[in-house]
Length: 177
Image (cartoon, rainbow, N blue to C red):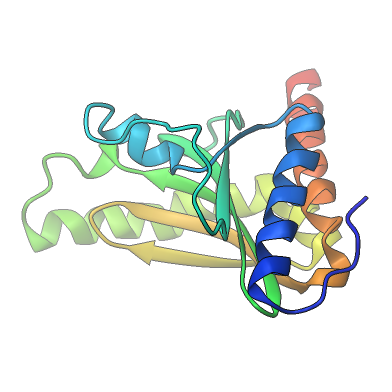
């Protein structure tokens, strides 16, 4: 259980450490560094275990979900600011865009994403989305990222573990079918 927190930099860091510890104890693979960047460029982005001086964000790797779309990697990001906890489960699409160098090629990939892949992710993640009132955001850059995210007050900090438990239960439920 996470204790209530007051606003402030020290409290923000304490809440981040508390959330990370809670998830570590529950068996999740947490890291201070972005695991997708490590996957993408392992020589440039090493996973470091050293805690930042003022921690405000950490990640969860090792999230394995059914391949309902050609995503490469799934991670979660938990960030805390002075007022809210921000959490996102992110599906990273990289390899489908390799080789695309013309606007028409990217447009075709984006249409496939919007009409085929994203709806499959929405369907897969709908129990988690509905249970926790989360929303979707899609970013189209060099890497397309589908974020299932939510922002909630410090008093709802336990929601982070509840969301991850629902994701884990989703993995188990889908495997049984």
